[in-house]
Amino acid sequence: MGAASYPSNSESKVKWGHYVICGVLYLCIVFLLLVSARRCANNRNERVGKLFTRLCIFAISVWSTYALVWAVCYEYRLFSVDVEIILFAFVLFV
Image 1: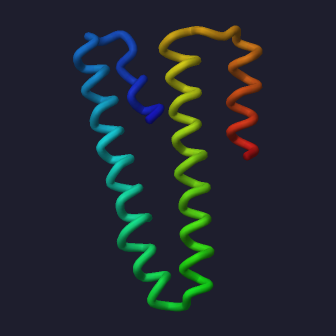
Image 2: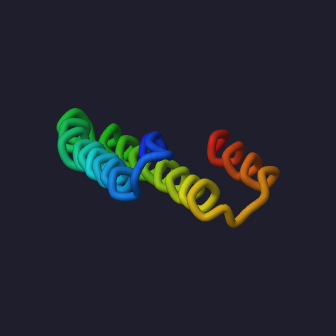
């Protein structure tokens, strides 16, 4: 989702277009993880399927949190630079 900030000096429509493209690709990855890959893991073994589901939910939660932190810090400038660094470091190490 951070790639949407690439055209920072361009028109707002182009910037939001990139954001939408990134969002659609993110949803495709989430779909592949939760449906196709999960089905494959469940076919292998029930324990493997449960572990894979837990790891997928954790990964998707972290990715979504990173996107939210990026949107709040970069787009809306609600926090100081120090708070931004702490938030990104927290999400990175989680």
